[in-house]
Length: 283
Image (cartoon, rainbow, N blue to C red):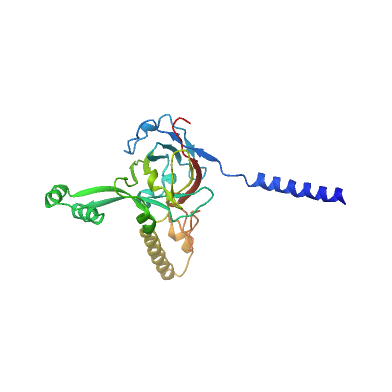
């Protein structure tokens, strides 16, 4: 009986080993120490010697660096399908403790075009008092492009440090050939379960961008309604073939629409997670 029990334990342990091999732990990405502050200008010139990683699904290339104050993230998109609708949707960057994948802690990085008065209202909403002289200076230019890193959860944002800690920010340079996006997030703002990220610690990061916008969906629905009316007027026919060029109708996979619209890879929603070990100077 002792032999049988021992054999049974070996079988169980063997099964667990196979299961472990089938579901390996996620690879830990090592951030590189930034020996000098990185200028956030939508250029990859400060990243020439940084290790380049790639998301297998979107084919987006990315690199990570940090110093004692900031986490720097570089994204490089070399095709429109990889970039998707980033310019409209922006990018969400989630952060969690290792082993977690919550989407309540993070930032949405979005670029907006504002009039001078909209910019003034936005600045004052953030708590800054603007004199009439400053307002007059802002109004000398009709339009502005703003880059904002907005916390996803206002309640958690209120618990984050304020004052002299800079907000999260980003810049981009987009083109049909190569698009570059740079992010800078203060480590003091990466707070989860009361603990802030620091050099040498580990965090989990998630990235999400693209997908159909509400405007695209509205246009798609209007196109379907119009095509449906034409089909009824013509006495029927295959609505899917009439929809023609495309709108993504499905979810993240970019599948066809409920009425047969063709998938468009340029409107695919992308997301992935990584475990990151922040670099520590001298280690």
